[in-house]
Length: 340
Image (cartoon, rainbow, N blue to C red):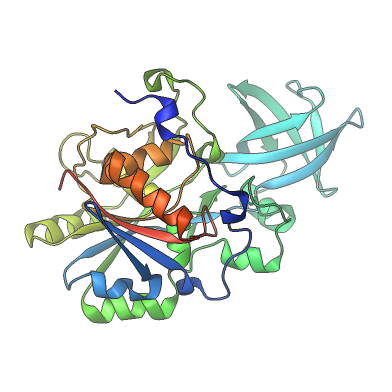
């Protein structure tokens, strides 16, 4: 049985990528196949797939979810939208010297007011005076991950979205997808690789480390996902043909595996708290494209379950020694599941 300390590692700060590369597909790719490690370029990933393989991508779009505001008392407030509940209501993190009480109004971005509602665990319900998506897009700021030290600029607003982002609702990017540009996608399609989509709105909890040594005591954060019927059909066709189902990112994998808990992939929408640790048997995904993840994170546990604990430890040590770039703006890995 693994515990939290088994998923810790020392990462030199200079290995954390602070900026994206000028070209999306110019990153490096660590290919881990069993215990074999091969250093590649991401643009060469086309050579690793065959006609009939299926790439499943998360088409969520990152919201400009960070706001700064002022309470009626004059106190400063920082708001990070976690989830849109409807077109006038969100769940949000609210950082202030004193938490707002129901009915308190907050002036946001010196542009509009929100009204605090009931607390929901660590989050607050906030009621907007107009359409949530319109106000967020017009007045919000892109919420870069906490380990990226600069303020988001126009370049980040372009590069911290996938080229296929469509459905607004995430507060963090599905970062494995950031490596794909349109020419690379075109090459994959020309080769006969099929592409399908799921939506999983990534929450801020994706950056939170696990804080309990006993992993059974961890309370997994909740994220909303949807798997369309056409994606279910594409997965079924690929598997019947003996081809791989490749999740682009841990978020795509979580959506697919969450929708496969009955043993078969089922279309639909739901919240997921699926916490994948070593010992989990993968039901749908056979290969995974992913970035490098934080120490003690649920995502490091997920990839260790997928490719093998010892194999991931060796791959991360190799990546650090060979100066790979880590985290959201960093390099990528291509993994095969041990339970294939």
